[in-house]
Length: 226
Image (cartoon, rainbow, N blue to C red; front, side, top):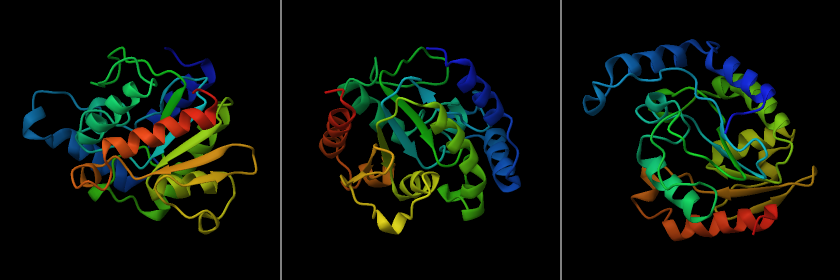
């Protein structure tokens, strides 16, 4: 599914961004040195744009690309353990037309869902600096402004949760993050929380498939897609 012109223009701008020197240096170093398992692949090595259905009623906001996942494949939550957990769940919930995401341009289609993140470049140690989150906030603001069918925002982890609330001009402390928490918002939409789909959470049982399936089912209900 091709994005409409405004989203396509935004994507082109995001991909060219060089606003954060530390992140530019790191994403390019990772793309150059690679992981041994992917030494014959060409890494994306650029900011990773959002992806999905432009008429999405549910928008997922994550943290940032993974070094050898999204930074390699060019698509959010793709090519690493987080994507191997996320996309089968999206397929089970009826948001994706297949249970796997391989890389940008593989033909995967999302229905009723858009996926984005608070930060568009892979950060060292998966920890973006506060100023980098603030710098990237403009991209999230413009993107969300174009997703006019949004009814539910599903935050994966506290950073995505906080970034979205700041977009609305709300204090995160007034809407505490908790897995499964629902936050009705002044704009008439709902913020729904989930633990992040990181390997650290999914392999330790902090987030199980059953827990995440329940959150996705609730997102569909709140969005009127059930």
